[in-house]
Length: 239
Image (tube, rainbow, N blue to C red):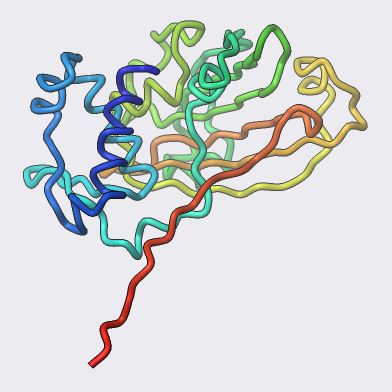
């Protein structure tokens, strides 16, 4: 198990057991890095993913706390695809189709709250599982918030992983629909243009604004969307 996942599991257990109730302070990045002998960046990733999942809340200057139960019931969590593949003991690799600055399309300017006459960073990446294409990631990134995006090697780590490191995410929205792929997307996914795909539109925020707008396209025959939820039961005392 990856080191950041070990930290997450540790915190999961503290919350699930009731040892850390609502609003209980969570160990800091420095404390976790010392306890688990990892870098502060690894500890930060673990806490950020827990925040993305709604299990903890993070406030600059105050620290990290167990989230109130009412905010822990998110129905959907989309994780880093490389981690999902590795958790199945499969091999992930990525092919970067494009990585460049482009004029901002009108719908992206609205989504990222950018000037329509500005430029935006654009990446298109195909993700593979054991050599088979399973996702085309078409992402637009706010250059004001992530100025070094174009300098990254996304064959070594995913955009999701990088963005979580440099702009801790505070909010995300998702729209899921079944679509037929564009011709180019079908070619990249090595599939028929008449085979349905599951497409996820994902927009993410950090405390300073909208970070990115991504379209994640998966062959319907090679992708399943699911999750697991745990509900805390309460008992009323009789009098």
